[in-house]
Length: 67
Length: 347
Image (cartoon, each protein chain N blue to C red):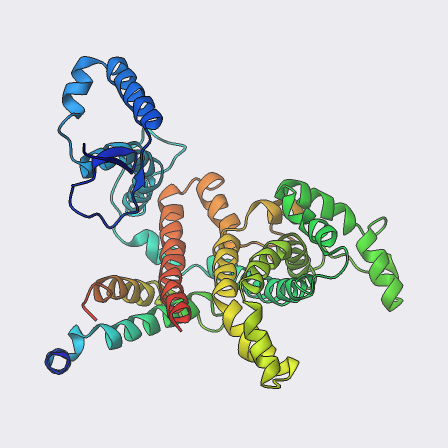
């Protein structure tokens, strides 16, 4: 039973797996956050909201995926 | 005769299906009292209401009870948020409520995200949040560690340390303005006592270099006790037998600290960081009273810029866009932080 579940999880495409997608969303949020508050380049600040928003929406969606 | 038992305030028959709850026998006195109370409640309930409520499931009754709270939450929190999202796409000005509102698309967001002054305010906020949290965590944890040693008079010192937290930020702001006075302020005199620098030779609130640190010192002074309390709760939750086992294994005090104390208090420390970070991102009152965002705009944190956009320049649409950006940042960060916290708790 456990092996079947593991196989089914392995068959699931990468973009539908909760673990790695949550990690990507987390990385996007962290990058967006740093871009928003960094003192180095205005262009990074300009694109920070898009990055943050993409990460946050992605996090909300993928956190509903089964483990 | 069938015995009766009490379960969650209701009397049930003993031959009813076995319940997973603990059941307690009901005495005759209890039973008669309950019956009397129930009869009184039935008489007091208006007939139409009694008719409607009877027949509702437990779930429906639960919904009935929480509906007022949900309605209040929607009216006070959710509706203004949705309204602000709408306003961020318009040219609405709160000082001209009767003027025609036009949709401006993403213009407000473009302006906020290309404004060097707002970018500067974000950097000031980041500087403030980073240093206050770092200092509060270090000092707060150190104080909690000392108080946890349970020395003679530790309860008294806990109360003394907690005093700054009990004060209003408005009082603290005014109070520290006097302490920072270069002529009569105690802060300058204490600094002068230890370093030999003349007290009137520097001005904490008037200097571009020192004023960001002045607000950090005040916030750290005020909120370190709060962090100390949370850390103390974490340290007190560690059972003594773990340390006893470590002693038996001849683990050094240093090893015990890093392998037992820190990992077991980590969820509490992380919670303290989360609470303080959220609070300091919206820091407003204390900074306004201390420096008013000055000198120039060196201590103008994001919430002060936001207030000026909304209620001095009256650009409500742009202020709403700015607010949404801050909201997304804090919300996103809180999401990943809670995930990290859950991971730490599961260890």
